[in-house]
Length: 163
Image (cartoon, rainbow, N blue to C red; front, side, top):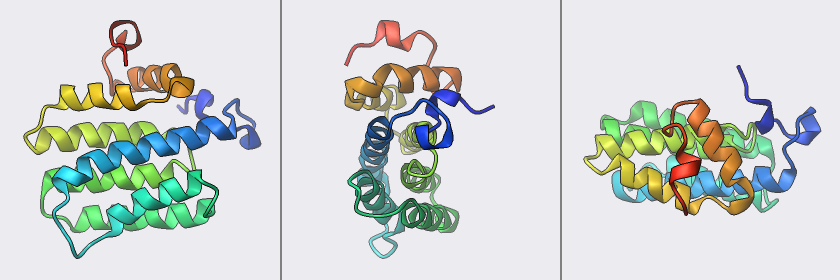
């Protein structure tokens, strides 16, 4: 079931446009963080473009439809990848762009980034801590509690971790 806290105001939910933009920017940062380490395909730029499009949407430069197209392209790139860690990083990028369409995709970005870090032989706990530190204060409690509900982050993280 969808967490209504992540439903945008224009769709009848409580989420402000500013917080929605912050979620897209945070998701882009999370995806970029793992792409920079795991995505070694210089020819296929679709995941990198998805991160750019997430930021462009948050800056009011492109439409939700354009961001969604970038998300779909990044997921196609993930399907074409033969490396599990790179696949997860590309999916993180796809969900970052998809955050423009539905804010709760930002949490899928976090999950795929953690999965990519782990599959790539990196420390997933360190990656999670990095993600939480990068969360803007205005959305930190909302996103952390959403990630806890989805079991992306351990329960009570908001009470034990500080940025």
